[in-house]
Length: 205
Image 1: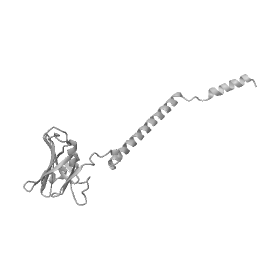
Image 2: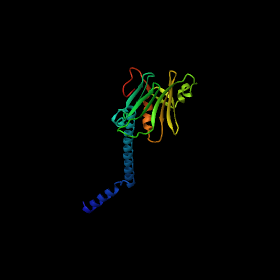
Image 3: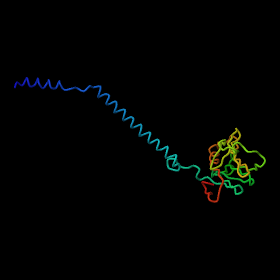
Image 4: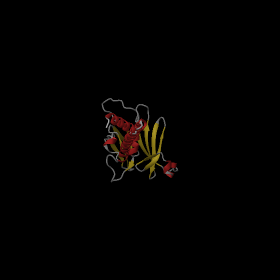
């Protein structure tokens, strides 16, 4: 057989083989890149969702960070069975059995303390009518540990008001503009609860 003829036949066979279009390869690469991006996004979304769920159902975990209020002190009113927490660098002063003030205590002699303070006052409500909150709990603007009440604010004070067993309880932050006790008052309000002999530990007064 003539070698030249054989080479021509081989060239014809090569030419006869189908050539894959380049555009198919490009689209395949684009598709793979898109799938990779989609998979990466799904992994990040799953991780974010896992963190959110963990913080929601395990708030005491390391993800939630340390509790800045764990060393707070506890005040309990034996007469009314009400307890709350207040900062460990504050002091509670019982002016009477129905009126208590909470304020910073001096850390050194001669220290000038801010005028702002928080008070808890108790008064009989026998002569007043029911509030909207007492009639319908959905109308209440404050709720903590089974206590439903109203929260209001003015430029001079923040007030949390609620009632139980014929008494009105009023937790008030008197604002003189010398210091910001907003976060402290918020936590004091959250800690309010009526105590029982079984529930009087430091974190749950």
